[in-house]
Image (tube, rainbow, N blue to C red; front, side):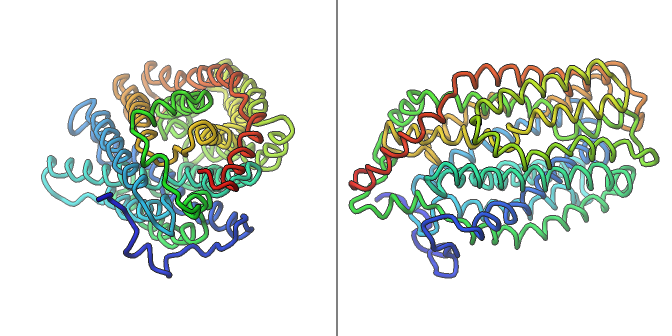
Length: 490
């Protein structure tokens, strides 16, 4: 008997149905489902990104307690478990039969697990050191490998919510405004530049876990807002076709994988995603904080970190106004390529300016301007590659085991770079109590990760995007797919 998940139970009850009933996207859906709702969990993940590595290098110093490389080992363990969890989640998605959709129930579950486990990553009871390390590893796995993995399935909603590419671009922009502009700026400004220096750095562990606990509490109601104000129209559209059987469920895994790798744009999108993920993993979450402290000499009394964050974060606000119109006029591909040159220029200026504070601020401003298309709209283009798979082979890859298996391989490759930044700091002799007086190896490592890695990233992206001319072919693909649906040929 075929296994079917969520067909009955809590998510089949009327009280758990989406509050969106229209076949077209509404204002409430855009604002509550893609701007306000995700803000809670995204903010928590950003706070954890800002603080977890600092916590494990200042309060519960993993490498100091268990030897250099212990943190990297934990990061790899968490990554491997996360990959396996991604496979399990894909299996569940592929075998889900629910009026709530295939993705939304798991996203809600992931948000709730994230909220609970994040607190216990910081709240470490008094016990033998070995038991404490086991506690940290277990809750890191629950948070990163289970909670965040399930929450990240929500990226599939950006293509499953509608077939209209303009509407997809709009919700993608709102999603990025929520996760980058609102979350990124707020968390970096408030947590990284103010709270870190005024109530965390040098303060007891209780300050850290009370802050995380407060954010986690806010996350829970917003997770339900996101759940109730999103809708998987394409998932429900397919299931309503008479005689419909999901192609992915009756196509062998080998043929599914073959279909993915015979989809030119899907492969390009995968490689682009790998490039950005690898560079993000190399950079770590606390690069900006360390750069301000070690290179620029930021401290509570000079407000360097606050000024650096505010000025260099201005492009995120500008981007909301200019990126979408530019991408509509010149295409996402061309806009991203042009702005990528600006990002490279910003890094070159930063390298030339060294520790000069005004130059460093100007360089980061230029870099963030150049990064705007990657931040706000590039995923709208790469996600649209799923339409090519549906157009050529008749099934959508979102949530399939085949896509998850490919994700496993790319995850292993990208995951190998997780913790590299922190390990590089440790290997070069980084000591947090030294502040700005670090050894040259630490300084050079921070410069390399801050400026050289992004230069490599954007050069590669510009080359790859040269071949990603999907946008001009999407209208024909969508028209053909919709015609099949009208004829009942799914």
